[in-house]
Image 1: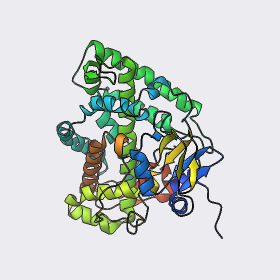
Image 2: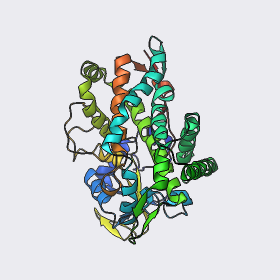
Image 3: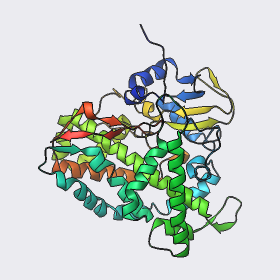
Image 4: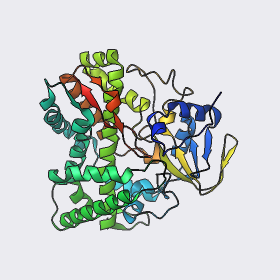
Length: 398
């Protein structure tokens, strides 16, 4: 007998093991309504893909976390490009894109390999370590915040702020006080650095953002305001930290569960780029994207009322058998055209190339030192958010 179909993004156990619930959503309720928390959820690949492209009906302006949509946003959050729709979004995205050129990203690879060596070499010959706490959550915060121009001694604090900003209490929607406080403290810190770079530019991304001129939607050419720079810096820092940290954490768990495929990657590191794409599909580090319905939208016989929060379940889309053969099977040799794990369309992840490179290099450098490991599953802990998903702690034995 089937249990009641319910998807609760504030239930820790369901966040850890969502796939059976998501399968039932795709089959039984492809447009799901959670009456308690007042949101709708779209779970099939094609529907998520289409909605990601349809900014005229599925808006980001109300926020991209389903429990803040329709609520007043912090001024820094309101100014983030992920909370804009075209054409305003496009004008601001072009500004940030100048800092993520292929050449600039490619130039970072030697530095990323150096950082991998710094974090991983001390554990060579050891009995094991916490892969997430000692490596996967340290690498991305160092890479992205060095690129931005924050002092290395502040990187750990920046990581803590971004983690707390996304934290949600069990069974409760909306950011708790600790999250609100973290956002405020981070905003004050970033504002100080923006002011310093405005007055004394350096060779970093914050300085570039304070100095750049761009054409706004009304045709005027101007510089970004301090608030706009703060919003971009905050978003780049948090997104660059969270996505890669969770991705590498999943790589640790999934490759331990598939030792034969892990051995193939050890023997041929050239297979790692394809493995990165399969890992992104198989365990999306950011499986839920919030949107607001700008009009009544009818899909699969269900009408989503105007103004409703809508969750685009990109994590569920990656396991949709309508799009992928045998989707619950992890296969580094799988060939597929695309996935939506890094978003799609207007809000496709701006740092996707950097995230992919960090993932590729991180896996390659891990396998070069540790061709085999086991995971202490009872000791694995997961982040408590309704946005990103993945381990916050993953002890391994070597």
